[in-house]
Length: 163
Image (cartoon, rainbow, N blue to C red):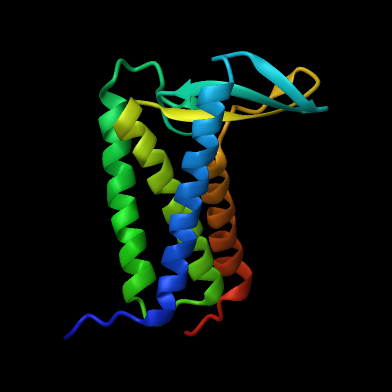
């Protein structure tokens, strides 16, 4: 059985690459123009705050001494490979699924680059309300979250079930 690559899937790969490039560019700007830990108010409930996340989402396991860098890098590498295969090789994937996969793939690879190059992920978007602060995040995290939400919505409400 030959592996088939469909040309129209290149569009979704380009979206992933665009996410990676935008993520890298914004992290570069944040890293070179912000002082670490200092918040700059952009608008009410929204700051730029440069932080380094040594863990996973919401700084999960960030204080574990370094082993988590390689663990999360390995997970991101494996998940990215699975997503790439799903995107390129699956024949019955909806447009919504392809969009979601491309977003998650681009975000995962953007954060994987940081983890491998620096040992941490660069975060700089800081949202809060009153005394409640959402953990800082970046464009890669945003792409992953939107992609995951699309996958959930697609699987619950959009994908036709055949039984």
